[in-house]
Picture 1 (spheres, rainbow, N blue to C red):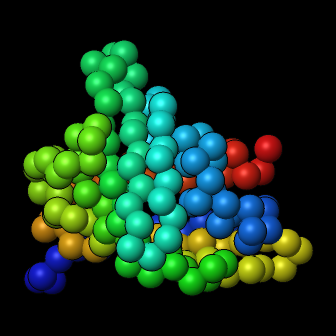
Picture 2: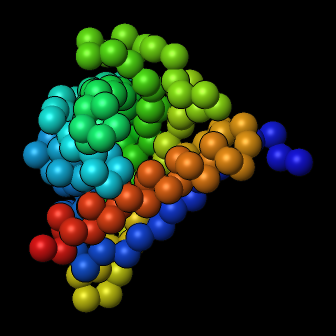
Amino acid sequence: MPDSYDVVSSREFAAPIAEVWRAWEDPKYVMQWWGPTGFTSPSAEMDFRVGGTSLVCMRAPAEFGGFDMYNTWTYRRIEPASSIEFDLDFTDAAGVSVEPPPGVPAPVRHVVTFAAGPEGRTSMTITEFGYPDEQVRDQSKAGLEQCLDKMTALLES
């Protein structure tokens, strides 16, 4: 039995690497894809640099209570057009850590890698580390896949 279960999700976009990269650093882009289906992102305060911390908000749809959930992304490593490594933490609106959902590690380390493909396409892989069991990992992966569906729609429109 592994010590932890990791999410690994890959996606290929019909967009150049610069546009896919921009989806991670430009708050106008982040606000269009952050959050699973039905959720919106009313704010993204980006401090996209090694050691910087971005504060992003996702808002639940009314049928789920319409609440706001905040995360910080604290950047460990940024290699332009190649990779981003950050720690995601659950926070309040001021960026102060709060208890994550049950089973979710605090923080969740993320590694995002980018590779240029043929005909201006870009491959991206996201790995989230440290989930304690398959159920929590699978729930996180489902949410991530929905975010990536929204990112695909944004980048390929």
